Length: 154
Image 1 (tube, rainbow, N blue to C red):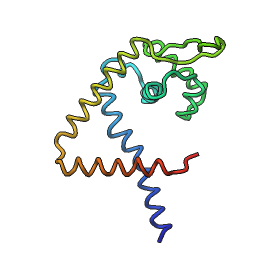
Image 2 (cartoon, rainbow, N blue to C red):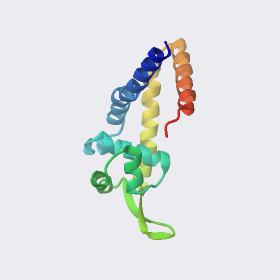
Image 3 (cartoon, one colour):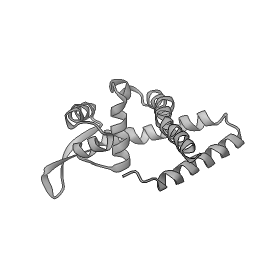
Image 4 (cartoon, rainbow, N blue to C red):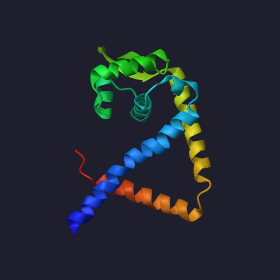
């Protein structure tokens, strides 16, 4: 019995990230980002931007490790974001030999506006849901967050 339940739990758990990525994040990013994301060819760039927003400045190796992307590929991806003036390479305070990737002022403005647009899009998208559905979603997401906190992921 437990093995069957565990297998179903794993299958459901593993199905969530692709659903979120494909059906929500890509639509939101494409619909609300304007010209910048039209110039960015891959969704990997958006993942880098979201990661930097969540974690702050990081070096290329740290970004690659978090997103499981090879350093050689990371260099090309970061270069595109530098060309678009979203991020910059800068020396780490206290150790000028180390370089970190951080938002430019343009990038900070962009991510701030982008977050507002994402929030607006979600509010509009969810406004057609019933109060019962919204409460169910809140409860389900809260449960998932609590269970994820208990998993041994290392």
